[in-house]
Image (cartoon, rainbow, N blue to C red):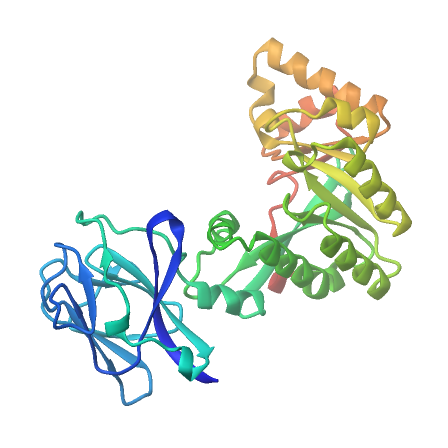
Length: 367
């Protein structure tokens, strides 16, 4: 087995094709004299060249091409050192740089491969997700961070628990959890990110807020999986006395039988659960009645400006709160930002509130 650099592209029908770099320097362009010939009028005849840098990395040099060479969607001026998983565009032709172990006898030279026909417009395609290497670093703990936001009794304002929130401070990745999950979705790795956030929260944040109930999040893709349940079993074994509530996103609640089995498994682990973002999409009233959760977290879209909302909306929220109470669940209002919102939530029957009014998310280093 030998290490082999290659340029991966996405062909017709979404198939992935590897163009193995068998020698350096390697010339790329439209002319048939190049090592890698790309039949695209957007490319220059001699567009770019790949050479071995003194550091051992691959140096990508733009040969003064008309439409440019891009690395991770940024046009390079002169040259750029490449790293594994970098995304490279020669004009509009998109590749990802890969490093793999291959059998030497299976390696094809460029003259044994087919050229590609690429679209001639200059809009950069997005078949590959950027920052894959940095994302791997984050999952392994480099740049992981988190915060804890208090959940309080609506009337006494005493803290009854904390929601653990994932954060990141990797210099080459977005800081926003929403943007990070968008990046993870492009790589089909939302579960990996969710698990990394959860493990960080329990190991690094929980020791600072001992004695409080911890609300931990589950991504819809992992909710009913054995992998997720196994992670909860490990958590319970490591922290037998920890009070845990798993937040289930409303979009995952579509199968009552699965939900019932899941709830029973959680009960065996002495773990409670909450329906999260209730009312953000479809309010799952049937599931709410058949498999009552310990807590129901009303989405902030129902809570924001509730004191100024129309009588019809206020009555709708009031009725939902009463239904939740009738099932034996505890209604929790998310996103409460001012006292007027808090007061109308209390009048409607909310038992718990969470939001900037009673506590912003506190970074781990400030706990």
